[in-house]
Image (cartoon, rainbow over all chains, first blue to last red; front, side, top):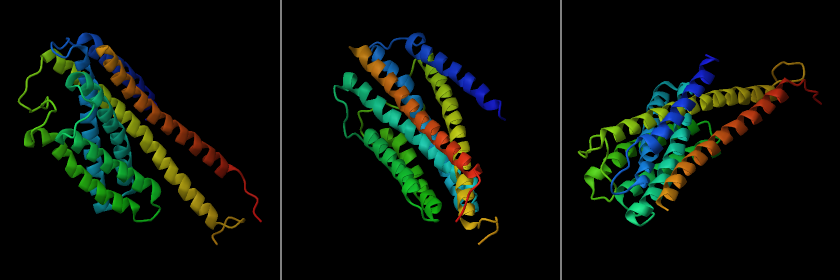
Length: 230
Length: 45
């Protein structure tokens, strides 16, 4: 298990480098947008990875609410945190693509606004985890996570339900994509998913260790100098 | 100029990820210090 992490880390670094090369060099240049379209190879996989992490957060939160297992609470926290990082990438790369293509950085379009709201929900979740010291925090956070996850399908399908400036979804959207572009997109998604998994793993270990240390501190404060309980 | 947007988007992505990884590393080092402190024998009044 100890060896698996560095091996996976090296493999992920190789995969990310290959994915970057494919995105910048391997993929064909789009006719109307030119090279700016290549932002899509980072923007879309980041969005998919964030959605998956928010669903993991949802599953772990439901599990925590039913079984009250601390491990489920840690998985929920970690997936929300890493999901927010990927969602931030989406909200930053989107406007950078929109400026040369649409001529504006941002518009209060349904897809963009709902993504921002989704990001704000999970940022509030993290603030709740960070600043509330009540014993009920994991339960409250799990309830918030369940509500937040309901937003994910709304964000994804908002393009279908509302008139929007945002391009149609690549998967199941009825649009067509060059197979070489799809191939590069999927490689980048795989690379970012592996990267997200590694970051979550590392963050999970950190959080578990942090909780053990907090317990040791609590126990220490209850012990007298001879090592017996007060 | 349009390539500038491409560079900005890719750079921003990696800056965000590296900044987050930096917070994890910082938290690990703080935790390591806390563990070292816990291992030290205590003198109590």
